[in-house]
Image (cartoon, rainbow, N blue to C red; front, side, top):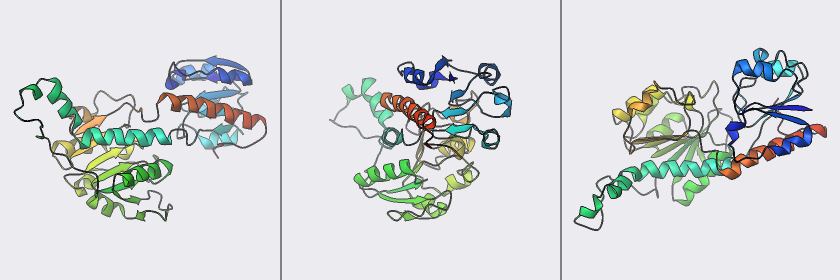
Length: 318
């Protein structure tokens, strides 16, 4: 089989893709535009892809195509009506990054919650040397114990965050964006109640019709002024212009994001106005990106391919 890997750079130069050679000839590109993709996949039987749209525009000339392997869980790049119509098998990877995203959720939280940028700069600037007492607490922060943690999207990652939050003594509840997730362990509440009464809110939901623009100025205005908002789901779940306004107007205490509506970040993103790192931290979509996690993606793709060739269904996207 001819396997075309369109975006190897998305996995990093420290990740070995040679296991794909088990299945045939591998042609590897660091990145691919839509225009480049049209030409590059013409004789491909397997495409390995992350962000390039897979639809009639990019795939019409790929007459030999049998399989698309997505190196992510989300499959919004796939026109499934088109791929189903052509009997192209689409497989994604699931569960590979749960522990990593849970870990990064708390890394972001503590950076904002304990004002770590301020205290780091206080010491490194030499101000601590001049201090008249052994401690310094001009930027106030609070214990997690007893705080209410609201989770939007209680899938595997949301449940992982819930367990760690409980270990810190938080009281966890959640809002189901689909309305179908009735978990028995944690209390399910309305979005309005979750917004109004939570001290920390973390988003771990997919992007769809129910979640696009879920958090706007209206919702941010319902939150506590001391609350912190974390987004580890998808960028477009939060209206970024409204979030920038909310932070500047101190409607909430802070926000921490690993995802944005447009990635890489657009030069005119309104969040760039917020330069105070005690109020906002944005990381460049790295929650999924520890070394072990990225290597696991490739392992999962290879296991998917082995299952496909054996006539077994594994992570097939319907």
